[in-house]
Amino acid sequence: MRFQNRTEAGRRLAALLKGYRAESPLVLGLPRGGVPVAYEVARALGAPLDVWVVRKVGAPGHEELGLGAVAEGGVLFLDRGMMRSLGFSEAEVRRVAERAADEVTARVARFRGSHPAPRLEGRTVILVDDGVATGGTVRAALGALREQRPGKIVLAVPVGAVESLDSLRAEVDDLVCVYPAEFMMAVGQFYDNFRQTSDEEVRELLARARGERPETGGPETALDSGDTWWV
Image (cartoon, rainbow, N blue to C red; front, side):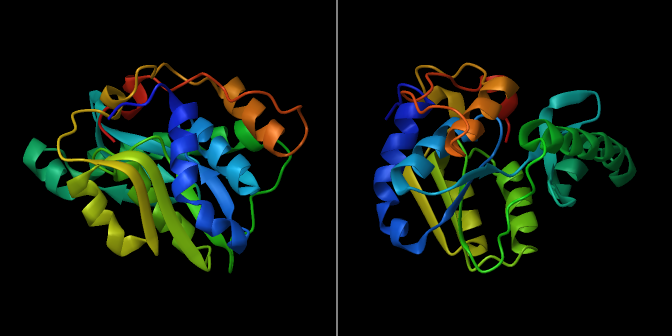
């Protein structure tokens, strides 16, 4: 299975989530690539849209290789098994994580501006990304969301590695995936158009969702594989 782009993926994912419309959910997209997908889900469900910012923690000197992630709210997930196998110490990786945490803070300000963080307590929250390979960034986001005590957490993705999805099921109330993939090298292999979504495009979609910009056809943009190859 392949998706033309994140817009199409979001519409196909939204069709599987229509039962949640009655719960007045809040849809959260993981920037950047998850936001165009989440935008389509939120629009189909008549739900508000916001972001939940997560940043990959790369291996020291090999930043493209994810060893974990840090999420808005300060939650850090580290793959200590991979750290040990590659010979990286906790101290080394935590120095990288501190820089990632600074970037999370900067991105929250960049994407939300003067808007406050959404209130999650007691709500049904649908967390959306463009796909799950190893699941490190999603795991960090879920940990941060749980601290906000939502009533229900739904993880929704167009595509995901079966093994990773199975490991995440225990952490959510529901997991919805259009295409669980038995073999996945990268999320981008399931998209015809997987180019990078800019910060400006994320801000534009959030503004549209808030009614600050006119609605148009869905964005024909996507995040390149460089940001999601390993996570």
